[in-house]
Amino acid sequence: MDELRFVRILDREIPLEEMRVDEKKEIRSYVKVIGALKESCSYRPSDELKKRTVGKIKKLKSRPYKMLGTVAACLVLGLFSVSFFTGNTILIKKKGDLYQLANVLGYSSTLNERLRVNLTVFSHADSQMNDIVVMEKEMERSLGFLNESSVNNDFEISGINTTY
Amino acid sequence: MDEKKLLDGLKKKKVWAYEVLYDDYAPRLGSVIKSYLGYDDVEDVIQEVFIKVFKNVKKFRGDAKLSTWLYRIAVNVCKDTLAKRKRNNEFLTDFVESEDKVTFEPPATTNVFGEVMDEISFEELMLVVGKLSEDDRLLIKLRDIDDLSYEEIADILEKPVGTVKSRLHYARKRLKEMLEEVGYIG
Image (cartoon, rainbow over all chains, first blue to last red; front, side):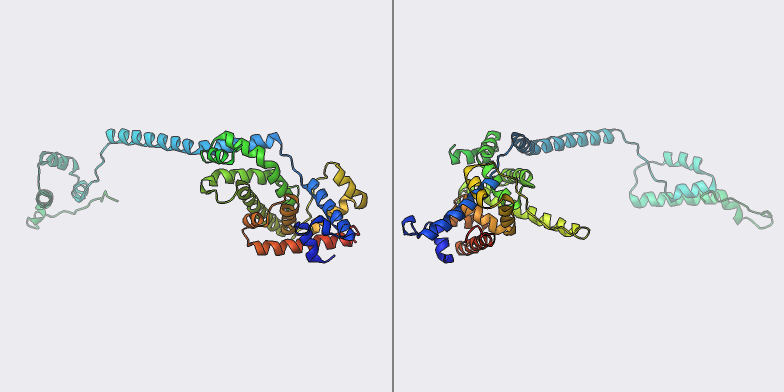
């Protein structure tokens, strides 16, 4: 049979009455194969698959709420920890150059005493000035004897650097 | 059930709507998937299709029929599965030489099946069908078995109607030739 005619018959463009006997036979055979193919492709989904599929959809449905809950819980926990840590902070100050120098010279305890006494409000420049003055005074007090005549300074200076 | 009401339920993510959708469409979709992929992966693909429906139902504007949209999703998931399968096969053939044969579950014995089987064995028929490409099988399934119009098939496959007609023509021709080879049509 002509291919085009075969397709036209299958598409029901040619009525049954117009078909020849040999064509009818050929089409009948083809339709039977299609019927068998239909049978072999038929599918009956199981109830178990339905349960699984619907269960998965339920899970997907509740996922945004679960995520929202998790985010809310994280926020609450975050806020709680921020408020806890801000209320319970130990301020650790880094020691400056003055403290290091005082430590080298072995005056740290005395210096702390003085600094505590001098904790008044200064502008930044003033406080820097103040530090330098204190430092100079301390240097002079501890090493001032070096300015004296060499006759009086007839001794050897030895020291240990404690910063290393 | 009314399609509009069902679609409304699906868009509102009502579980009952998905249960109804499953009852109404899972057999048809399963059949298309089975004709395209063979017996393997049918359940996984059905599940994947329903998950895709759940995720994308809001994008469905209702221009096409719900069934057409579902078929389209199923065909796309099948194509993805097939691509994955081919990738895996390519990997496996490095070790074992094997042919990618489509396996069909033996059907229930019915009159139609029995009539055909008088003249051609099930194995022979499946061999013939297995020789067709996935696309040929899908086209024959959609047109000659599910009786969908060319426009619906074109919509499902996202191809022009002319292309669908021409491809189906060649698919039928190939099937007919194969049946002639085994002496079923002469």
